[in-house]
Length: 74
Image 1: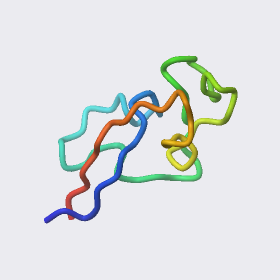
Image 2 (image 1 turned 90 degrees about the vertical axis):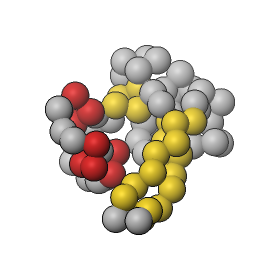
Image 3 (image 1 turned 135 degrees about the vertical axis):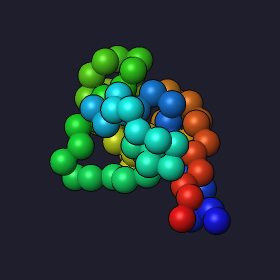
């Protein structure tokens, strides 16, 4: 069963994105205030528009946003 549907930017990364985990434990499914995010386009904590990178701030309102549909399973 689907828990929710959200669209994260394809360019967001955190250290957890490089851990080999199974498909049901996708690194994007859990957000944390201790995660440090960066943008693949700038390799920095700010995106090409000089705003901070995070799942909450990287959305359609930014010109650099590139949609990546992610479906969470319950």
